[in-house]
Amino acid sequence: MKRSKGKLILSASAVAIAALLGSAAMAQTGTSGAAAGNDWVSPTGMDNNQRYSSLDQITAANVGKLQVAWTFSTGVLRGHEGAPLVIGDIMYVHAPFPNTVFALDLAHDGKILWKYEPKQDPNVIPVMCCDTVNRGVAYGDGKIFLHQADTTLVALDAKTGKVAWSVKTDDASKGATGTDAPMVVKDKVYVGVSGGEFGVRGWLAAYSVADGKQVWRGYSMGPDSDTLIDPNKTTNLGKPVEADSSIKSWQGDQWKIGGGDTWGWYSYDPTLNLIYYGSGNPSTWNPKQRPGDNKYSMTIWARDADTGHVKWLYQMTPHDEWDYDGVNEMILAEQDIAGKARKLLVHFDRNGFGYTLDRETGELLVAEKYDPAVNWASKVDMDKASPTYGRPLVLPQYSTEHNGEDVNSKNICPAALGTKDEQPAAFSPKTGLFYVPTNHVCMDYEPFRVSYTAGQPYVGATLAMFPPQGQTNMGNFIAWDARTGKIVWSLPEQFSVWSGALATAGDVVFYGTLEGYLKAVDAKTGKELYKFKTPSGIIGNVMTYSHGGKQYVAVLSGVGGWAGIGLAAGLTDPHDGLGAVGGYAALSQYTALGGQLTVFALPAN
Image 1 (cartoon, rainbow, N blue to C red):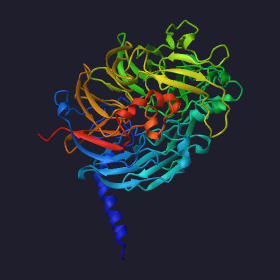
Image 2: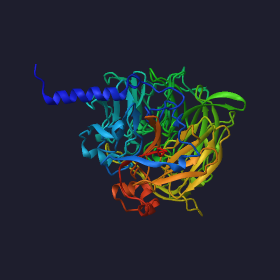
Image 3: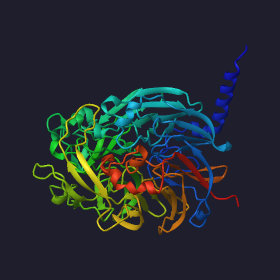
Image 4: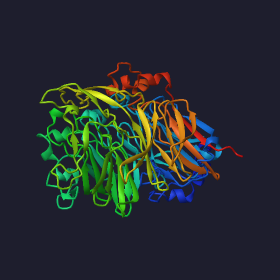
């Protein structure tokens, strides 16, 4: 039988790529180990979100010798968040809208094995709040999973790039978008949704890895049947949650357009079989239009991975008045506190407090400011006998709601983009410290009344951003002790540190800067050991892998995201970008648009 030349080539390519992936990687459907190794198979390295690698070829003693090994252009000039995956001999690289995915052959200098470029309606771009970013792809069961901007969840054959299945998760015409990196656990892939600035009601959903069928969906707000809260089984700070507690905290049906979106990161404890994540700001940003605690926006969730049922939750910022999204990553670690071994969940919230909880019970153990500039609240009430236990004690002068009137509240710290946004922190079990990229930014905030129209912005506030009074740096990179809630060391940066951190067994910590520098510092002391300026500002997450017996470090550069939206979208009005354009106006003097992967390694000898 005669076969076409094209089919023969496709068949040969599929066989070659299968060999590159390797049998061990093809069987991989979860990443529940303690640390990342030769491969980087999850958006955050491992299910525990520690962003820690056991590789130790690159050390504090030799990292200063790093050189650029190779580079790759994505061909897109908007903000590049997230990080590539490495599975066997293949690296999978993603890009912002139009959400291109590349499979690169590491054995042949990054040769392109296949490329997937979805055809999406460009009308989704105006409803992407803070640049056209995407935080990465996930891998499981021989498939690469991508959540596209238009809320299409697509499964690509890892060998060929062909679409295995796709499913729509929400409605972009109403302001819903997909920017999050999916997470794969066993036979399910989990995704959330963006769109809080358009009144989109948040949710987390689980889909079958095999065929894309929805297994469960839990909303951030609404009746218990929607949130999957069981008053007989769900607790909040150790106490039972009352029936329909969410809708009782909203006025009328406001919960239906209440926000609480889920565009951050997800983590998983295989022993407890719990998925952890955070929900974002309530809609609108004008607090007087939505009286009540607005549950369960701004909340840490612990859901059963199989059913979605909520075991426990904790709302960090009830009745949020500042857009302090709660979506930042939940890092799972085991440490002793007060002489007792604990399964911890550590979370660095936008509101400026670093939280340490028992991830099995939801008990709140530590809540302290991780930037001394934070002023909107004096502290989190840690008195279990107090009626305000677990709540931030808001200082009235920094409230954005004054006697029912919209006023311009001045010098609130942090700004709406938080002491940390989605850029993930890292944890080193060797040092016991968390390494946190932070923003050191304050704001003026003036709410105004806004009406809801599906698919139109539903913000209702004007912002101006600037460094804390008397200071010039807009960022710090810190080492944090989650057992005590103390900063161990802090490195000031001119602009916000908007890249994800990486900790390694070589006692080196990596991060990137908005000017475009990849930096390496000593994990124990914070001493700068190496820096290299990439072609564009870094808002991507540093990752590491080993290939051919050699350790590599890689990062995406491409300025953008909320902090870089002025450059990314060509905006000049200082109030544009929800206040970020004015705050980061000087960034244009240091970097320009780009979209490049830069890979580093030690010299051969």
